[in-house]
Amino acid sequence: DAKTTQPPSMDCAEGRAANLPCNHSTISGNEYVYWYRQIHSQGPQYIIHGLKNNETNEMASLIITEDRKSSTLILPHATLRDTAVYYCIVRVKGRNTGNQFYFGTGTSLTVIP
Amino acid sequence: DGGITQSPKYLFRKEGQNVTLSCEQNLNHDAMYWYRQDPGQGLRLIYYSQIVNDFQKGDIAEGYSVSREKKESFPLTVTSAQKNPTAFYLCASIGQETGRYEQYFGPGTRLTVT
Image 1 (cartoon, rainbow over the protein chains, first blue to last red):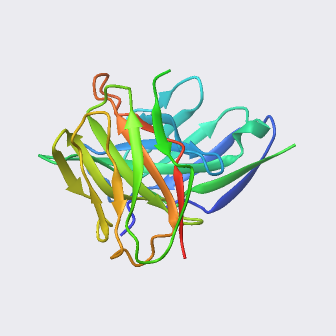
Image 2: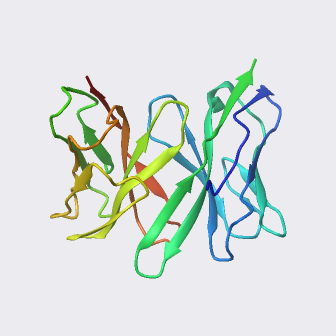
């Protein structure tokens, strides 16, 4: 079963905020939420991550609901260069097996001029 | 420049042949990962390694093998037992010093088997 579910595609007008949702209803208490983006045929790039508090960095904000079952990635002022596939990921740490990252199927964001 | 390199970028093989994909990092990271990506899909974990001479199977390890003899290198062999080997393969590493566990990805290798 997928650990995260995302809408397959979204559009956003240039200069407006892009809000990308993710459901992770089976997340456990010590599992982090990560967001990465991938521009066509390149390796994904880290955007932001969080556990239960909202987080903000120079690229984006991450809003995690109080029950942690869903989150939203916010790109405050989308530009054409933000057109990419955005992945919501859950990081699971095993007791002796290290960290595993479970990717969703991603949301293809198109920023429209 | 520090980073992860994967070679080659494109690889073509005939069915029934084993093929090894290269992944090298000079970031001094302990943990390394191999993922497979199919068109329109997310990344699926094949194998990962926390430390030299140690590795664990991911969700789709069947038909693949790895080794981790050096910290810098984590090659992936796609064997003839892998039923659908044509895919985009991505290697990543994570540094755990900061506690952020950010994955750094290589540029990927696109493997086509005919």
